[in-house]
Length: 251
Ligand code: NAD
Picture 1: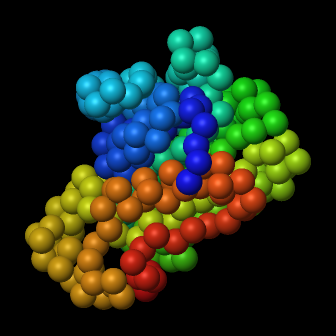
Picture 2: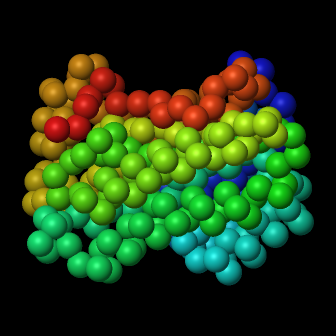
């Protein structure tokens, strides 16, 4: 897989899938802007990358906030150069059955998972000059999971956004794809287990048993797929949703 060094932005890069993706893109030679609303977490990931000989900048920003996004992308362009790889990864869950789902649960999930991808992509777009890679992190939950109406709608929205932008930006040499992770072992899924009152080990054993590849996913499984999609070699793939779930389908 050949890669030219580029400037990459990873949102929600402070932990979990975003952190693994930031590390992997840096290993592939890219300069990485690690954007997260948790200032300490993104600074830590940037420091880890630098300690391993890579180039990274931690940027504290809430990617659902227009002002924060404008300032973050301006700083990236100023300090690192034009960002041409974008991984829209920031996300969270607020699960509840529909009758208990609050407007705040709905709005927070939409803002963090979907509005953020719109805001950051719009801000990065002027920097894409006849080459660009956008990867949006969706979820297998886009196909429907219980007690996650807000999250499923946002992640299905991500897939629509991906397909619309693939059509719109394709003529400019910009690919836009989505990755749909299955169950990945991160703080997000650990928190979900805690909210359900289930032990994380037990939940992971149950999920692994239902998964054709008989294990849960690791953040690096997603990072690896993103690394491929942003590579030169993936330049004829656009508008696709790649499931990375060990074969697990939601149900
Ligand atoms: P995580 O909770 O471990 O990490 C998410 C990171 O995003 C955190 O560092 C958090 O601070 C940051 N973040 C949240 N809201 C933000 C905001 N408004 N602005 C900036 N940063 C923000 O989560 P994860 O499991 O690594 O998930 C990453 C992405 O993958 C999410 O979009 C999630 O929906 C998706 N996903 C995860 C799984 C899974 O099983 N873990 C499955 C499918 C999809």
